[in-house]
Image 1 (cartoon, helix red, strand yellow):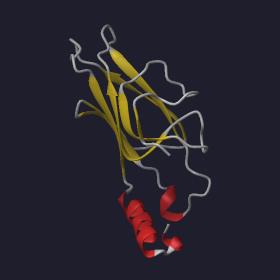
Image 2 (image 1 turned 120 degrees about the horizontal axis):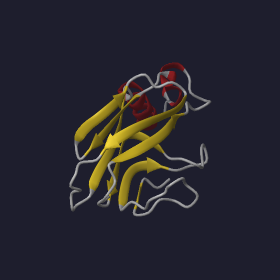
Image 3 (image 1 turned 30 degrees about the horizontal axis):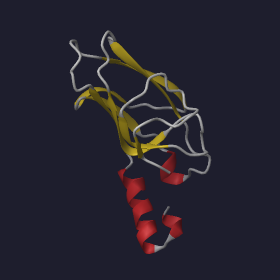
Image 4 (image 1 turned 90 degrees about the vertical axis):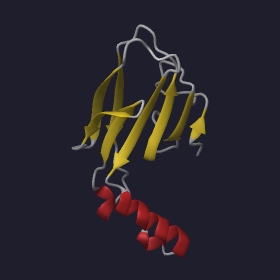
Amino acid sequence: MPSASRTPPAGGAFARRFTHYTGLFFDDFATDSAWLRDTATLRLPPLDGIAALTLRGQFRPHPAARGLEISPPTLSVLLNGTRVVTLRTLVPGPWEVSVPLPSPTPTAGFTLTLRLGGTAVTNTLAWLARISGLGPLQ
């Protein structure tokens, strides 16, 4: 699964081309979307004449999730390193966030960061399972 690219994959619901991303993953679980593990970063070009971005997403727990894995994460949205909003009560289903853009538009464009919280324990268990070979930790 690629986690960095210069263009989005074909078939996604992307209306505008972005210049670079890291931390977004595309697979067969939901072919119409991307997922992130801890942090995803999108480098956007200058967006003259646009006052805000609307981010639409959906929290989709994996059907095989169990135990600690079923707790929803938090999601923080940052624009150029400044926190815009943190979603703390994610429930399965869609969500929407409006991200106001500064004016004038920076000539370098924007860096949009999506950061999950509350995943340290499950990430540590998955890491331990990988290095120890103890699959039940995952």
